[in-house]
Image (spheres, rainbow, N blue to C red):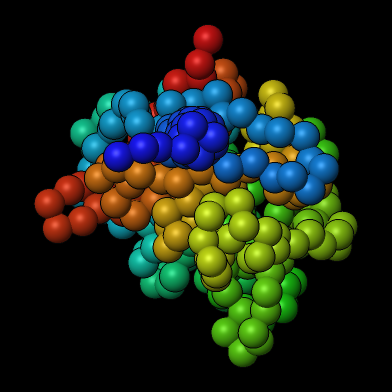
Length: 301
């Protein structure tokens, strides 16, 4: 059989070109799959997470913190962590490796979600947006004598996140869900706290669509459970237990990156905090086969 030389040459060139394109696409896909970070292209500065979320140091909590919710350190001191659990109005404090915890009662039964410490004042958030505040000097008493309750500070919704910024004197209340409104964003309300009073100081928002785009989801309803500020970088870390996601923003809550929370140790991540050395801590409620715990992620050197 005779072959057309021109035809053979053309076929060979096409085959080589196709193979080259396939190799390039294969390399691009491999690089994409190796990355667990998705970064915003909306103009915000890129965030590179300085923590290995696959290698935590785990601290199991005592039984009375099985349903541990919010956590915080006083002045960033890691020797003692302050925590609440979401059924009783008790403020717990203990060393991370302690087998037992001390606690002080500040309220009755309720759905307590998060806490913050600002200017030696402890502030606790209920799921309805109500805030309970009292001096940290009361923690060594069986019960707090005078608790100030602040109601109707934020719109009716479900709230799970609370944080304070010592540098600015601001307190931030994070919305988990607005049940009666088909919102496309999560709202964050800022308040100046001074002389026992909260004064409105701005509102911020996290877009569901932007988070979905960054996390690679077709659609997402972001339901965050906690937030904390990294004082070294001025970035906010927003945690979502429902979505198993960590969202990093700049100081004004402009989204910079998202990180999936993979691994069995993220049972139910409800609380987040930093110590003064910028180590990251995430607390998890207990499960069928696990106690409540706090995971520490050391800052990469």
